[in-house]
Length: 322
Image 1 (cartoon, one colour):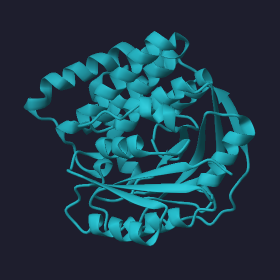
Image 2 (cartoon, rainbow, N blue to C red; image 1 turned 120 degrees about the vertical axis):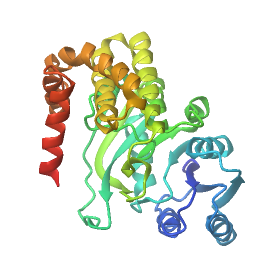
Image 3 (cartoon, rainbow, N blue to C red; image 1 turned 120 degrees about the horizontal axis):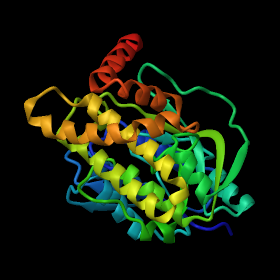
């Protein structure tokens, strides 16, 4: 019999999308599945919907808790998981029918402790592309996988789109009360896995909501990204010094994003100085790193002309994208 695999779905204010997500999980071809819906104190009908799903499908169970955030919801589901493997799916997203099976087969075929699939970003203006699911894959050791993720290559920091050993997940819980919890955690999963397998197939469908955290205007909680980036950098620096240049590039990217979103207000003046100091101290390293992605090297080149040059380049780029 194939091992039990747990799917953890944090649920909060997604009544419009929840049925689509759950239906995609109920339609999985993998036969031995448990689906854990964690109602994080959602004020809409989500809690009631979760209970209805659980009453209709023995594979589904619901956890209800007071609202404590995405990390706490994922952690609650993780600690309740009984499967040998675990995967996370956000409740406004959905997955291909072979999502779980393909990730598990990849682990079985390669002996990898962590498997990764591709994803497709979908919005109201962009439908899912009905391409055939590809079979190409490659394997990496933890050092190379960390580099691939930190250089923002074919592996992303998202919690979803990956299959983990549950015992690893229980040792690597998400930081509660913070945003950018994936950035703060995913590299730790890779540090625990000796072998990682990655397939090209876009099996995960990421719904880009206009009201999502990433789409909103700047708010102070965005500084959580810097906290996570710093933790990641120092962890890599201590544990995997060979990948310190990659961690430097990833942190540079995070700091750039926050600086360019930061409003020109006096209240943020000190924070802007702190961010610029980090960028100034790492810009030449990023510029000269042949593995740094092109976007980061361009930003580093602009930063050599000062903060105003970096902002000007960003404004021109943004206007072209509109």
